[in-house]
Image (tube, rainbow, N blue to C red; front, side, top):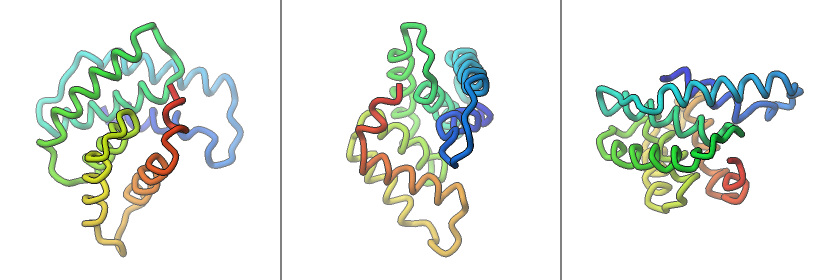
Length: 153
């Protein structure tokens, strides 16, 4: 499940570091992410954390891919529904901030943004991990320019 998040995030940020993006690489990664998301779509996590990780991976996968079998919007809506159900069960954590961020990027519910910002504000600023800095910056980029994220699917 964490692998789906990793490869989806890789797809979403492909070339953002200035490196060239090759069509065969982009196509293969898109296909791999979408196929893995479809395989995991009907599975559920055994714990709130496992369900949160699965929802995060699925949501990011469907946001990041260009493929659509005609039901992609429906998949995203169902994963959002599952995500919103599991969020109250998750402790304040990097996982929760990530899930809040990507849910916010789809629905722009200010309560999601406020909760993510509140968790981030509780983090020790002097000891932030690279992953914490990355999601903090990504959340703020989404909050500042929602139009950019609306056109990604």
